[in-house]
Length: 376
Image (cartoon, rainbow, N blue to C red; front, top):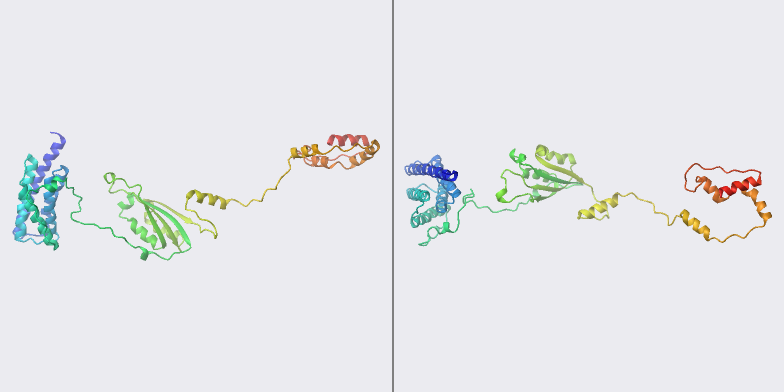
């Protein structure tokens, strides 16, 4: 026998035990022992059979057990009295459930028309408990049609209906202030395991001032892969408050080791500045604001090569008489020409390298002339 066949056999053995407990409980209720323990035991018996049948895709059994279970739940909550009429319908339903278990185990068929009639009666009891009109009876020949449409899966919610409701949290907000913070809060599974709740943290943040919360759900996996004890949501909070950063951090003190948390102060923008939502534009603006003020560069600075070219373009001076040249030599020796002095101060090569050179003067005209020529 393979593992699956062994599990299936175990399931039917447990069904026999559950059916015995179901019948014993219903007989006790019929005898006036409708205490909560007995009613709960009867409900659990049908619920267990339905859960196991769903694992093996026994659709007829699942469908009938679901309607039977729903009726027992009305009795368990006290909305349906355990009257004689009600108990007799449930005893007949227990017999039909046993026949369905036998048919599923042995590969036979159950009385579909009888089961459809019992389903109508059970639904009528549920409608009676809720104060509603009983549903129309099933048309002849349609028994098992619901199961034929596909398997009925149990979501564990019974007949509980849920409708999302929008909640306005503006009344929970405090008074805004000049301090602005951006908070990124990602709970971990440890936080929820310790019975902490993200909504309570968010309410405490709202109490500090004006807050805007956005929730990132991009990490939520498909339902088939979701971990019931996992944590997939990240909350981003824009907070405006009069409180300092220390007060903001106090809100997260009891969960700070069980979450990913960042709290960043947002500087107030200056008047007249352009704000940008785009991250790239915001980065460019930030770098422009952070750049130091620089003095404007001069329009044009003459390069050594430019100076040489300009000098080359100057016309050659007319030759002077020899006696004028001789008279000019002492003056040159006493005061070197402007270009020579500039080159001497710049280090001799005009590039600023080396110590400044000293000018040399002498009474000897020929020596002065040689030195002056060397400086040129």
